[in-house]
Image (cartoon, rainbow, N blue to C red; front, top):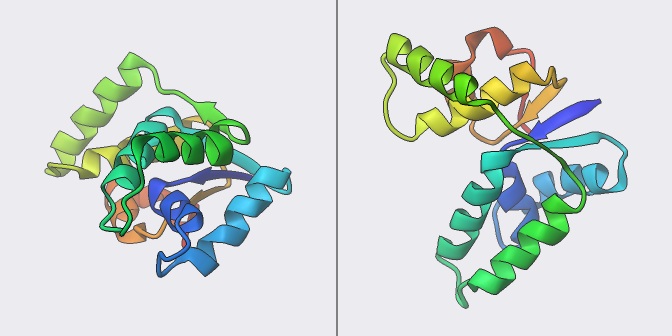
Length: 144
């Protein structure tokens, strides 16, 4: 089974005090062991790093620790998939046609990657946002 992980699931799996950690961690473990095909959109690496370094934790996650967490949990285990410039352009156009603005574009890009690479599931804790940008993908959007 090909599974594309959203940042929300990766953060929850990696950060033990996260309220969804126990639900997300088994999925990350399945991806890291190869039980499922583990896919991540390339821009998710940057988003994951940004979130990890700004979480309201004490102590804060340092940039070097965040890089290590991204590297050890994602880069070494996942197939990193990238969109083309025309995919980005088409996604921006699609958002304008839907009348959607702001940060939801990042979810739309992940949905575009899910469609393009024909994943079986898009794993996220933000299912409502993904349904808004990918209504045809409702059967593929999965909450752990």
